[in-house]
Length: 164
Image (tube, rainbow, N blue to C red; front, side, top):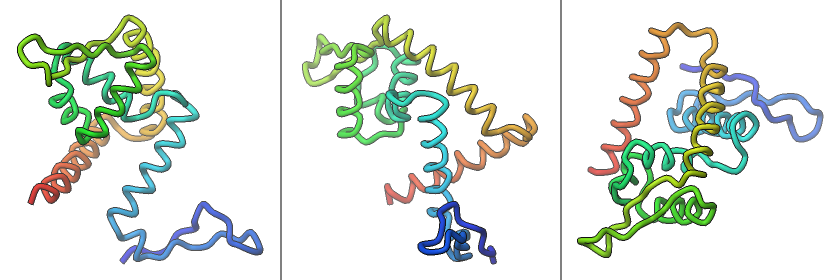
């Protein structure tokens, strides 16, 4: 059983920190949400307040697979199709991504980074890697690799449950 820990938020009246119930600390979804919330706060402070995590994922995917269609890249970026369309529209409006219609299928939208997109990605990626080093400080390279393999395994398992 996981025991309670002090919460980051102050109590309602006297400023005392409340303990997070063990039931929450032992709930994978709660822990994943805590990690995500802390990561978002660090991202905004250390990386970029205008390029979101999903936007960054799309920029990386487009950089890795230039000219691929939007639907295929949605999977790479771990976004559903409607979210992908919204993210790409925003990136296109900012001049970071160029969306072109496929010659053989007008429904397919092929994505490319613009020059500004390439510059933005390079800068944001540098700061993101700096954040990664800060977040993983104190862990060995082997420990980091094992931890990431475990987290990716959990993500794949949870994603497979959606498909059931």
